[in-house]
Image (cartoon, rainbow, N blue to C red; front, top):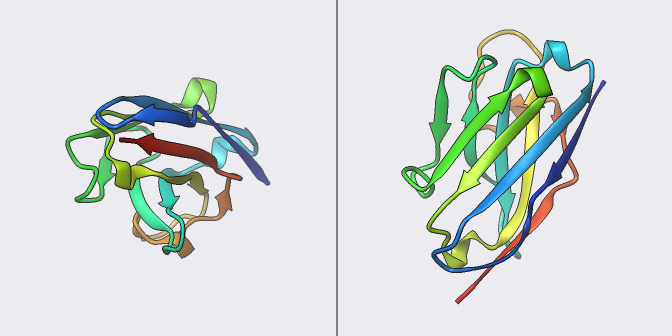
Length: 126
């Protein structure tokens, strides 16, 4: 089992920045890839960013590329999402997810992840 706890959400003005953290506990040595997703009110959950097990490969949605940065520190069992130049449409609950299964997968597909956090609210005001 892996438990994921997100933090760092809050209220920020458009154009501002926030840094989200996701701390993993449990069988974390098996974590393979980690990702961030978000769900805005009335919308489906969508992919934001993903990172490979060693941080060597990162992936972004077109809407976040160039403004968001995903990273991880395996020694601290923590993944991060640095969000800069936030837009109002970034208002959502942000979730981190972890995949421990081996084999081919897509970082952008929800069902390819095994564990999810409870989410942290990010509200971007004008």
